[in-house]
Length: 209
Ligand code: ADP
Ligand code: MG
Image (cartoon, rainbow, N blue to C red):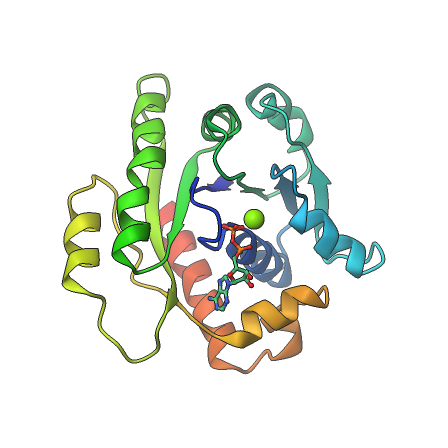
């Protein structure tokens, strides 16, 4: 399965979510490839911080040729994640054309939910060529124990993609772990943060069946 984590809004959590999901899937025993399409290369930096000992493969490809190259690159992997780039539409389009499923991390604030229409439109355009393409929103940086604002629920509800039941909270552990080339799954496997990541994995696996 190929999954692109996309949202042209920078800071929505694409890199955080991509690395954590890639790690979680690899811990289950799947062979995982993570493709960093952001020219800033945060995911490559994360992998470099581990001195090349990432628990899954990481490559950088920040040109809009993913849809052509990915079938070859993906050989031998069970799951491929694409960490999306901000702004540039051609990279996002290319990523959408390369995958089966688009996951859109979104922060539960009005400004952030309004910004998702860009990626939603690109996904809808692509379904003309790829009728089986699916997408879902993933709430990221939710403030623990608060309900999602009405505006957030309403705006996301207008789009034709579901919002995953599993959500990722705002937790310093997510940021701290990535800075040292780790993940919460490794640094704190029994934490609430890790449980949240595993819940997202389960929901993706269930949806695939
Ligand atoms: P993007 O790749 O979409 O630009 P990042 O994953 O780099 O977004 O996240 C942007 C910033 O927000 C980073 O500093 C990251 O550490 C932080 N961040 C992302 N998700 C969370 C979270 N769930 N809890 C705390 N900090 C987060
Ligand atoms: Mg990023």
